[in-house]
Length: 114
Image (cartoon, rainbow, N blue to C red; front, side, top):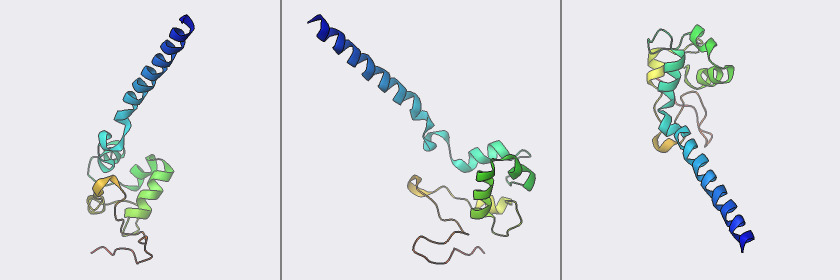
């Protein structure tokens, strides 16, 4: 009987610690951290002009800056103007949004700006 109580106490402790870890990680969900555009601008837009210059993008991780430029730099000048940043819309339902320079999944042509 004592052996069963020890096992039950161990299982209960494991279940409680799993719930505590799960609760701690809940704030890490993207929707709860705020929109990605605002986080990126807050971190890398050092002059707070709403655009990302070449120098500001150089301070971002290479993978991020490359992805931003490939997806949103419609005039291909190596930086994101305020108009290009403003065109970044939060996707509906938390899924991927439409990016002007990316081919559509159905094989269609990329969306043309302007």
